[in-house]
Length: 239
Ligand SMILES: [Zn+2]
Image (cartoon, rainbow, N blue to C red; front, side, top):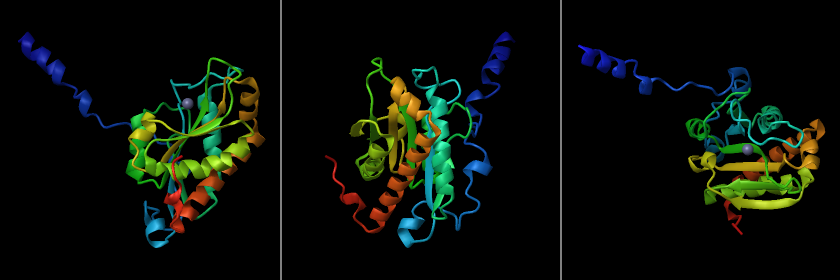
């Protein structure tokens, strides 16, 4: 008898069969209801119809604060603020259907972020981060890609970022970050500056700096797609 009860406890409820919680923002912000067409991936590049699907990923969130800034600010708040600005800029252009992995202070697993990108069939995945280092003097902007096919996107955006942040240019780098690794879309991760560097952090938390950098990200993204449309986007060679 006790054996049967124990078995029933083990088998019920079926925890491993519970559907995943869908945490990807609210429809008002992450939807693209005003865009022409369905905006499904590849349409724009395949047949010239409007609708590049862009997934903007504000790094960290919820129980994961990310880097602790020099002033005590948390990376997760910086990334969300900048991600919202990038979203707002793209939303104004009918050629782009922007989505966000999170629109509030929510924890999302890295696999869920890349999974959402694959689910959407995103044309680009942009992960926004602030950097951290034990030595507070370390500074600069760097952009990461994993798959070689993501290098042209990283390169296009980094070229604009390097000037816009006003920080030392640490270059474009290859790294198997988990959020990039499982991503089937062209995917990059931007470390815009060092939160642990007091001078950089102060800039990064500044509204005007964020507006300028969001503009640079969008500029680089648009250049990437225009280069791809000309058919020479993939000619960018990995150094
Ligand atoms: Zn981060």
